[in-house]
Length: 281
Image (cartoon, rainbow, N blue to C red; front, side, top):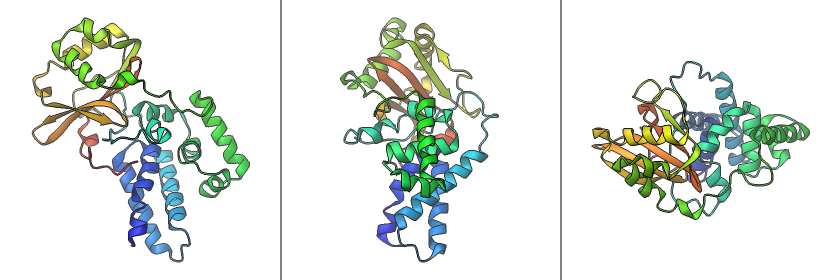
C-alpha cells in the first residue's frame, strides 16, 4: 500500500469514529476497508473507494448493534484531542455530547448527516456512497437535522472563553470537597453520565440536577485511587485523565456553556486502552 493511501487512515478513522462512537470498532471498520481496497483492483479514486467502503461497513455495524444489555449509561469512547479550533465543525462534531445526540438517528440518517454537515460531501457524492438518489439523501439529511433539533449552520454553540482553565477550577473545587463551590460551577439542569459498562464501579443511571451532581462529584473525587490526575483535552473539550501507574483508569470531560451542563465519566476499561493513540481529526 502506498504512502498516499496509508495517509488516508486519519480521514477514515474520523468518519468511522463519528459513525460508531468507538475507537475499537472504528479501527476494525477501517482495517476491513483497507483489506477490501487491496483485493479490489483497478480503483481510480482510492479516497472515494475507502471512505465509501468505510461508511458502508459502519452502516452494517450500526444496524447489527444492540445496546439493550449494556449496564448503566453508555458514553462514547473518549479520545485525546489536540487544538482543533481551526476547524469549528470538526471540533464540535467530536464532542461526547454531540456523539450521544447522534444516537437518536437511524444508521442512514447518521451517515448522511455526518458526511454532508461535517465532511462537506455534495449530495451527489452522498448518493453514491449510500446507494440512494440525490433526492433521497437530501431527505435523510433534512430528517436528521429535525431529529437533532438543529437549525442554521452550527452543530453546537461554541464553547465560551470561560472554558479556559475550566478543568483546573473544576478539579480544585471537587478535590476540596466543597459542595457549594462545585454547585457554583454547574448549570441547574446539569447531568452526569458515568460509564462503567458493568466492568468498573459507576453510577447505574444518569444523575441530574445541580445539588445531586455536586454531592456525587465531591464524593467521587475523595476516592484514594483517583489522586493521580492531569488536565487534558477530551473530544475537543476540557477534561481530566486519572491514572494508576502507567494505566489510564478514568477519563472525564466537561460540556460547558457558561456553566458546566454535562459531565461525562468513562471508567469502562474496554474504552480506555486506546487513549492518546487514536488517529482522529
